[in-house]
Image (cartoon, rainbow, N blue to C red; front, side, top):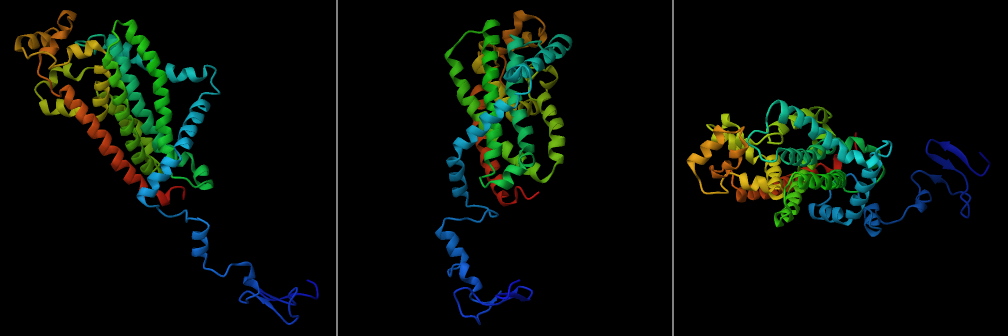
Amino acid sequence: MTKQGRVSAPGRLSGPVAGGDSAATVTAEGDAENTLLPDEPLRELALRYGLQQAAIRPPLRGYAAELWQRRHFISGFATARNIAMYTEARLGQLWQVLTPLLNAAVYYLIFGLLLHASRGVPNYISFLVTGVFVFNFTQRAFITSSQVIRDTLPLIRALYFPRACLPLGYVLIELQQLMLSFAVLIVIVLITGEPVTWYWLLIIPALILQSLFNVGGGLILARWGASFDDVSQLLPFLVRTWMYVSGVLFSIQTLVSLRAHHTLTYLLQINPVAVYISLIRNTLLATQRQAMPGSKPYSKLMCQLYYTHLNDKAYVFNSAYCHPVVSQSSLWLWGVGWALVTIVVGFLFFWRAEARYGRG
């Protein structure tokens, strides 16, 4: 320390101030020390420069507006992650299609050929592949969303942005992969003899509804997964059980043991995944529309023939003469209801914990 200044006490510097009186003393409490700080309160200074506190929950309307402003970030993030996901694999992006196709092949071998789950189902190959692809969209969206906050902690702590961008981005990744899978699905559907009809246009609203449902569920699971690591460990088992009760591998209406349990059959058919699978099957596959219960006037004799000859393809379309447990119009109502309720509840649930994400 030179003669012009010396440390006289902790937090206290004594000595002449440049350009000032030689007797002036710079202290931790003195005015000279505060010349680097503005005279106005820090809160007003932050407001004047548009600064905001990061560790608080923003207003709901402002939060939604921020998400919309970052829509290009969300789509860019999803596309980049989607491309990078398979860069180290030799087959690259082809795995986006091969994975669900291989799953469908295994399910067909076990359930279609060995367990005869194809009984009473017209065009079982297209029926099965459609169910696997559509269910895979929800399954992967939920599992990845449950891990997204923990997996992106460095990004969350480095930058400020609405944390809901992350679950939204990962659902968009799965939607992009589903589009590739659907290109293969359409080829399979045409090869198996299904015609191209105007009903195919209804796939668009059906996928929009399923995407909204996936986003809402993903937001709920993202918040739970941020707090409890056990969620991501338990979820694969729950989702696999969900697949077995959603009519992915078999037709719920062909289970003779359920005919006496109307309530159980109804609950199985209105569960969200089963609803969206049924909507897409009925729009894409003409054979499913023709065999759907309620599509023809009820006939007790014809319906009974269907259930007593499930192994005979000659009677497979007699199911159209049976009473529907859930009609096609009811399926659309359930699809809209599940989508709206889940996206609203999920968004509010995730937003309420916005200030806590990234704290470890």
